[in-house]
Length: 415
Ligand code: C6P
Image 1 (cartoon, rainbow, N blue to C red):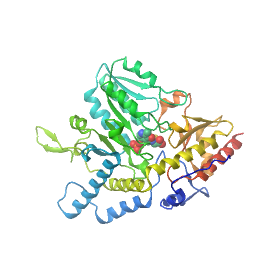
Image 2: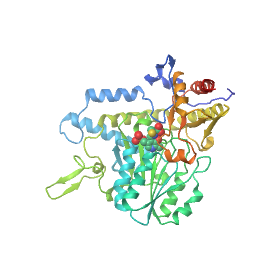
Image 3: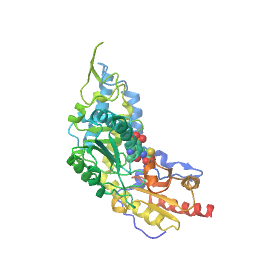
Image 4: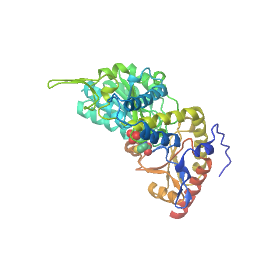
């Protein structure tokens, strides 16, 4: 493949030593893990802290008066503080732990949407959205009689902001929910502009940061949004943990989402009152060790540095766009490098993406094939699926070479 110099300010080869799974083989070949957008691999710092937490400090949180309970609660609340600092949120009261981005987005759609939407109101999402930031809004709009609409994309899968005036002319825009980085195609959206527009309409702005938070630093105050959803497993953390950041005054006004233990202040036969933020939204025993692991993942990301991560991924993405783009019969979807995250989605003429991914798997190359939970976007481009390669801080240039070589083999097999 052609000569492109990859200049990285992080040493991915050295970092890989922190990720035990990257040393394994698949079908007799070294694993080339190019599916970090689905879920990231875990460094020993995260694995070790979860194990040592269970071995030394584990019990339920916010309940016991004994030493162990204090230690567990401190570790859990310490993780919340790490999320607060990561997002530059004003207070830990604004950080609600959830099971992931999906639950965070459902929380807002239900707890805010059911009480604030009605006929004549408009809920706006985009054609790029992951189903987690699409279906809850579509459903809650149907439940409340609000209108549900999308910001369309152009041929490069970039948002057509020229459609905003037309959308605003159709009623009262009350909620605008947008992903920062689109998972299936990699588009980086102008979310500050969209947040400003949303507020001009008197709407709330909800950002899905599931594909952004692993790769770039985020400042909720600078972004100007009202809610933001994260998921830990894409950020080197465990599964089953994520967070919703929300502006305190909105969270305070909202009814709870789940009900049960921990989220109450008092319960009588007649009436229940709610706990203070953020506990009002955390019914039941939370994912405690997962939160502690998430905190360790945030520390790990900070130790590498988002700037270095971004720089490394940009170089890899440029390299992949050039290498994959040079293959005859392969079409890459999505925007140019400048407005793209570390994601390259493509279709191979006449070969189903699942077949592409399967043959790549025999070469040890793990990529995702499918609609990536973005069926409306697939429909927009008249396809049902793509093959998607996605990169992270541990990805090597030579793994992209193996992907490109593998695609040559795919074409030969189906010739
Ligand atoms: N995207 C992908 O392969 P959860 O499952 O709750 O951790 O995250 C859901 C989610 C929400 N928003 C975006 C933009 C996402 O990319 C995802 C998860 C994975 O692209 C699995 S479908």
